[in-house]
Image (cartoon, rainbow, N blue to C red; front, side, top):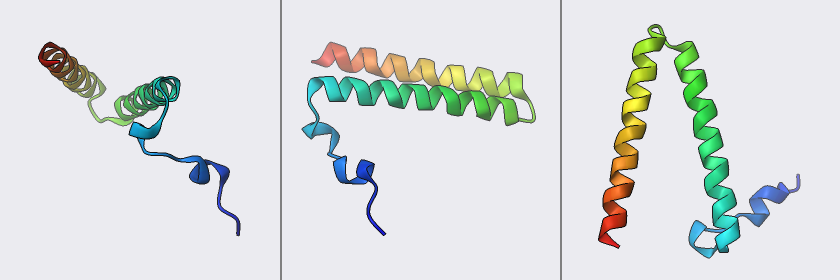
Length: 71
């Protein structure tokens, strides 16, 4: 069985061009969005789960802002 093209084309993130990195980040964000929507939909308490996910994303944003200040 031949390897999939996608596996053969995979490079470490650091080796991607700026444009490829942007595309990868965008795809990751879309995947995260879809995963969170599904997770909230499947949750026993969707409102609480949604609030927790939003809180986690807020924490992530704050970490990005702090890291940016250190650059």
